[in-house]
Image (cartoon, rainbow over all chains, first blue to last red; front, side):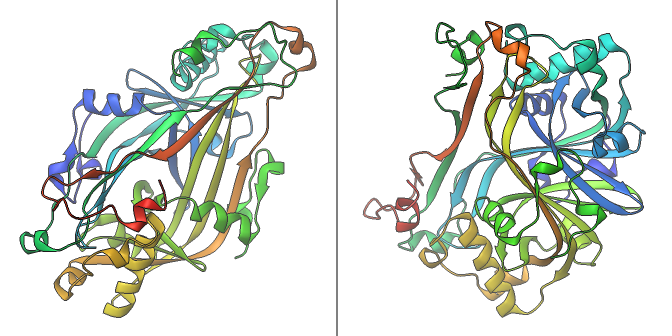
Length: 212
Length: 212
């Protein structure tokens, strides 16, 4: 991965990080990304599930999916993964902030046509969404693979931005009587809801047990 | 708000919705959006906090913020707000999905220069992030307002896409012994963490109490 002008964090450069490990760690905690592309100068942005393997981001959708159709043509893409994990509540309105993790990726996509490679890419996405689930399901058949468009995006440049701090108020504001601190935002799995038509002998699978 | 080619949901058109109420309801449940813009054909995407009032999306940042500097020039922007609230775990890998709410907005930004309008825009963002917090803090002074860039984005076109269903498996797959159902994903506030330097007489404020 390189780092040029387009991926350099401009504001609060102290929060910009570019090492692979930081970037991959943030990506691997999530499964939803936003993909931006441009057609005749008009920007578009689409949220989609993804899976990462090495410096490849796999994305999939229906065969006629507009974003994937553009992405498959090898145009420039920009991908973001971002999560807020706490509100930072300062004594002044101005110093309010959020603790977050954010990654921006630059690169291009490539259409995957080979059935075996396609199947592998889908497995990578599935594992990123819920580890172990792939082996608990009926795998895709030939017809389903044909109905699915899969794109492999190669990360050419990347940057990460992280804020993980407490409140930073102006010196004179510490004397104010306003509450200040962090309000954490937690994302957790709830109790699984079995399908109405599920045979009641079937127990909750390991993929779910391991995240509850 | 209009609806043209660029904002028409192509895939799964049955999940595409365009009425203002649906779109505003989804926007108002969130405070993080992704903004895409294009410079010489290169797409960029930046996550940022926002506040909605009518058909205006307010965004703010440091005065030299790159995204806001571009947005302030009135170029085409595309904004997305998306949230996954459940994994849909089917008997087949192919029918796995997610329940989600997603909004895509098209329009252009305008720089806010008037101090009063700027202050109001910041209040709208603050209220969207945590209702009631604005009145619990020291308001921005002149110097802070000057150090802040604020952009008002007008929603010209919008579309919402929602999936809120159970599992849809192929008829023959219902006989399989694979577990199927929904795995909810919940986002909640955790216990507030007071700033180390907080006077211990200061109680948790109403803005926090009302969301816990």
